[in-house]
Length: 230
Image (cartoon, rainbow, N blue to C red; front, side, top):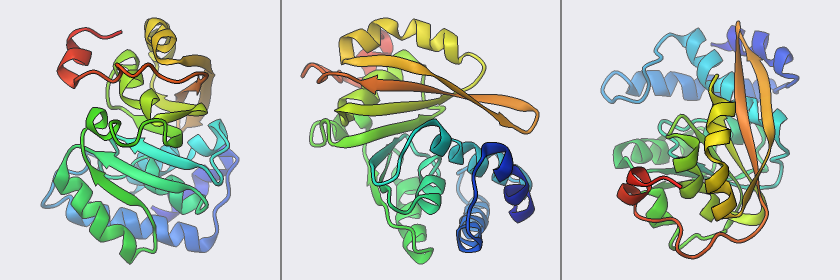
């Protein structure tokens, strides 16, 4: 895990201290240990965890300036991309949001022992938005839903002037085109698609700027969002 991290950071133009790499590896070890009894990740080989979870998450630090920002990771799962971002950029004020209580409970137990500060919240994004509307500088999300659905879950949480960073694969441009109507309705604007190398593959981040407040009627209930995406 350590070797893969150290080898992959230069391609992203990033550096970490030995202590940050130690913390990252300790989190990876805790993840794989817990994964024996709880479904946290399908990636179980240490080098693959370093490449596909850690390095992939850290690429967001090149896609946007996150230092000193309040960041909400929507649908964080086992803590990606939020936990690696917090380890690499401690000035981030991080909220980890996921609907699965067991995952969130594991994060809330594990992170303090590693010296990683984060608010760990078990809730659906559309419910969480009721009390945290436009409260964050940045929302991030990875592999949760199609972008037109994801925008309605994430943009209501972002302050006007803030950003939503959606980690996507080869279909990033297609999803961005599909989400144009949603962006217009929710107060967002596509800034661009950031590409970065990960091994032999190219991964992408759809970068969306929140230009104006999201109308109060959004987000709708998830069943409605899924049934009738914007």
